[in-house]
Image (cartoon, rainbow, N blue to C red; front, side, top):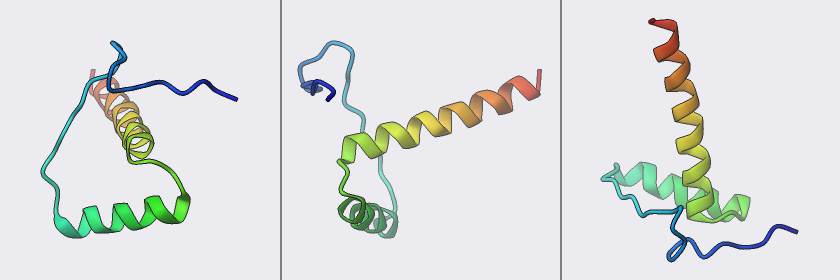
Length: 62
């Protein structure tokens, strides 16, 4: 089992915030409950996926 990290105090982590449409946030929160995962875990996965796709797009345009 993986060791849990205290992300609030760990030097490799920082907090990030965004203004999002209410319907998107509501859907996101419902899915978190359905999938039984945490907010931070889901956000990290989503941002990593977006970054991977954006990097591919940038590399194609070079």
